Image 1 (cartoon, one colour):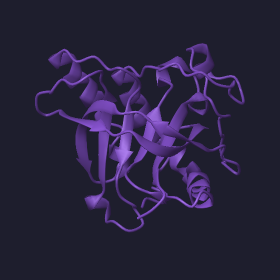
Image 2 (cartoon, one colour):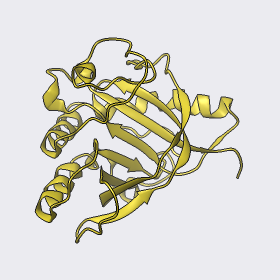
Image 3 (cartoon, one colour):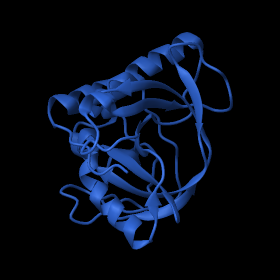
Image 4 (cartoon, one colour):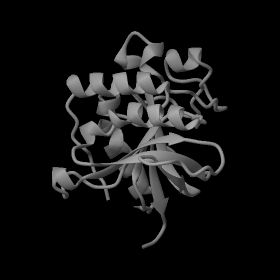
Length: 213
């Protein structure tokens, strides 16, 4: 189980923002209620189906849903999670070379709890969704994120600060009597180039859930 990865704001935020901008984040429109406050997401046609939670995350608006299968290409990363976002630009460049088209916004998968696993051994993936099955060439790899029940929330602010909202999702998970089963997924919904402020960025956080061991 993952608790709260520790990210430092500043350089990490700038690195991730540049990587996402280079990767050309895209939005997948979703029906639902209007976000809690106007943002770049609304301008780009994305309407979260939950209110967007904002720092310092004293309240995190959380629910659950059934996630559909998601094919994706990715690069593996071992080491500090602050380096995961920087790989997204590399993934996108490789996709262009190989003629692969992203089918939605980039995301990252975080497999380990930094409180329990040494930094050098942390496992994560920098991912881009694709439509259908098409085996990429090295260094990219291909996999399908399986359909699964997930606890989720939308959070605003600098993307490296998104883990500050994790306690709210884990609290909801515990309230439902569920356990985490699989990596935490962070989907970066708003391209940094679409807004003048990191505060207008929106990420969706998903915790895969199971009702038993």
